[in-house]
Length: 101
Image (cartoon, rainbow, N blue to C red; front, top):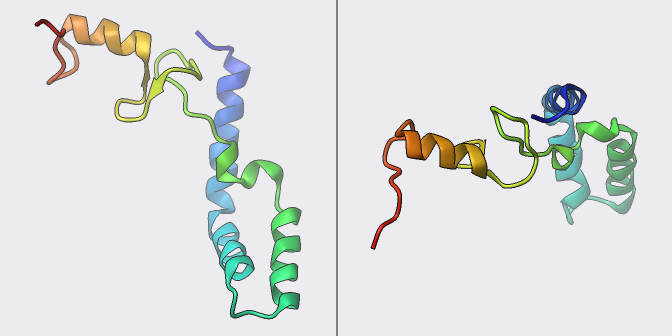
């Protein structure tokens, strides 16, 4: 089980990224638009820098929904590899069976 503080930090980052998502997308679009003037693009880049650091969605980390483990997480299930294995063997994940050949 991951530390509660680390899990809470991730939740805080998710909320902050959701709060600034619209503004982040607008500034990013202006900064990447080659048709805009250099001054406008520079102003957009400065605006992006002024946003909180955790408002950037790339700072979020995928974690297991059950244990909070940050590594070995499968996006399809939102679970860590160990929990997928446990639940698959118990038959709690439909469509997943143990390989045999």
